[in-house]
Structures are given as C-alpha cells and as structure tokens.
Image (cartoon, rainbow, N blue to C red; front, side, top):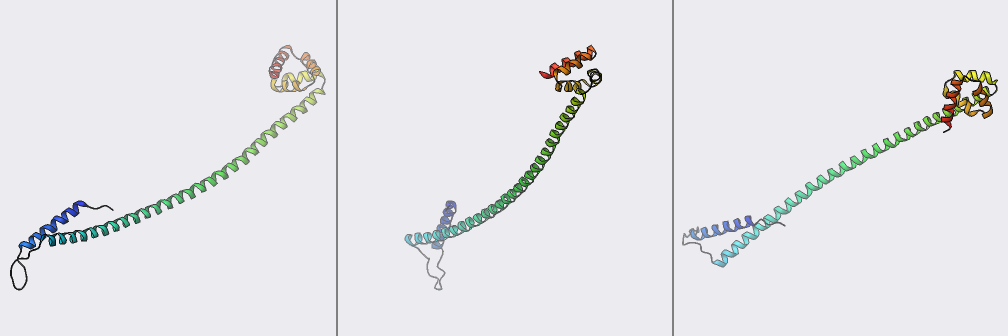
Length: 190
C-alpha cells in the first residue's frame, strides 16, 4: 500500500501547530483560571493518535480507491472479453462462409475440368472418325480433301493414319502443300 508522506508530514505539522496553539490559549473552563499545558509525552501521544487516525483514513481511502480501480479494470476486461468473443464468432462465421465458397468453387472446377476432358475426348473421337473416313477413301480423293483443310487438322489426321497410307496421300498432293504439311508433321512429332 502506498503511503502519502507529504500528507502525513502536513498532518503532523498541523497537529503540532494546533497543540502548541492550545497550550498558549487560556483554558475555557468555567472558572477561567490559567492556561492548558501539556507535557511533551502528552503532546507526543496526541500527535501519534492523530497520525494513526489519519493513516487509517488514508488506508481506507486507498483500499476503496484500489477496489474501485480493480472494479473498473474488471469491467474493462469483461468488455474486452466480450469483444474477443464477438470477433471469434465473426471469424468463425467468415471461416464457414469461406469453406462453403471453396467447396462451391471445387464443384465448379470439377465440372469445368470434366467438360474440358469430355471435349478433348470428343475431339479425339471426331478425329478418329475422320481418320477412319479418310482411310477408307481413295488416296487421290483423300489428298484433295486434306489439301483444302486447315494444316492442323490435316496433320492430325495424317499422324493417326498408317504410315504407308499417309505416304501415298502425301505423294498425290500438290508439292507445296505436301512439303508444308510434312514439315508441320515432323515438328509435331518432336
């Protein structure tokens, strides 16, 4: 506990001054005789009693002040705890929302990837069908058809054909187109 020494010193001096003043003042009894005199021991005893009384007052005030401060701090801690709980609840809610969005995104991603894989599969099936159709054509008609197609499609179809059949088709094409497709074919294989 913190003792206010300035206050005690001031109280002591005040008591001392009051005691000295009482000694000099005439006694206010009915007889009106003489002055009130105190011995040094009596003065010390009175001062000690007054100091003890004041210290007890200070102790009581300090305890009440301390109690009040503790109560205020407890209220602040309760308020902070409520704020932390509210933030934790908000964080949990946001975490749940984020988990839900991640789950939705995963489902959408799987659908997208499924569509992409299916498109690749369908493209491969269509290419296989074209290879089948062109393989069943006569080489001169296949060469004429592949010459007018885009080079990517022509190279894809030729890459899936039997090499002997593809070479017959290359030989029947225009030399420039055949050279360009063969170059793309070789680049595709690398």
